[in-house]
Image (cartoon, rainbow, N blue to C red):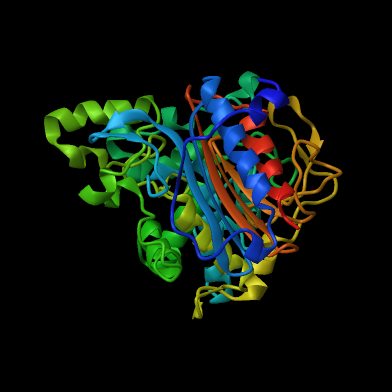
Length: 406
């Protein structure tokens, strides 16, 4: 669809109540009108099922909008609404990183600490050189996300006893080996964040998910944000059933009732911390998290974490010679303690402020925090086909959102 065609569209939007108008926070409302039409154009072309976003600036939410339909009719609902709960996928890694930084400021662990000091199975060969920082920055060399290296896939779970996953999963990861030596290359890894979750568990004496709920979600008034295994029936009724895994759960619901939807995310087995992403949330609640980050670790006057710990999110922790080698890219990037850091010289796909931190979730959700403009955003563009990705729905949407900042 051409630009002139987008201009003629009328977007079918649902808006939630906000704290202010765009003009009150120096944002161009005309850009929201174009954003709505842009999202509608992608829906009309069959690229995405829905789009939603929430925007915060200078202490106020000024837009909370949903457009389009649920990916799958569910519980009598067909329309995507601002309070529809969707899986944030790998955006959850940001929350895991914050939990680690909180433990660091409490003197429990530190970035340069060898993982073997928490997990004895790592006291072998190259694994003994892996630090917490390596895990946070995807430079540990541990098993890459499926598809990153077609010529060197590491199906670590094949070394695990699925009937005894809690006891055997860590040794299975170690047995699978590394793609590269620690600190040598940037290799995106879900497993690294499972290991971080295990460290949180051992360091706190709590399930990692419970620690994050009590110390991050509740203080930030993210009362609806949760993992499926902790879902209530009210929350389940507001789910976006988005992929084949969800639909398989729907079939179980027909036999076992709606609470069958309360299960771990697809990549987890029993006993493995669900800390690589997978939380269910809304754009609005994720913006609460953004507000906390932009207020030096305070949300509505409540302390969540200190600004010194949070500064590591915006600090490039990679050595100059470390490259992203996934999918054959060999590309330089800036990476903080759990998040990419935007640089216009390195990332020419989107238009953001220099130094904005962000994280994508399987290409369908994006969380962004901009200290320069005191601006936070969360949006989701639910692709019609699972594992699809398109520049327009992800990078293009972010560029339009940032274009309204005055």
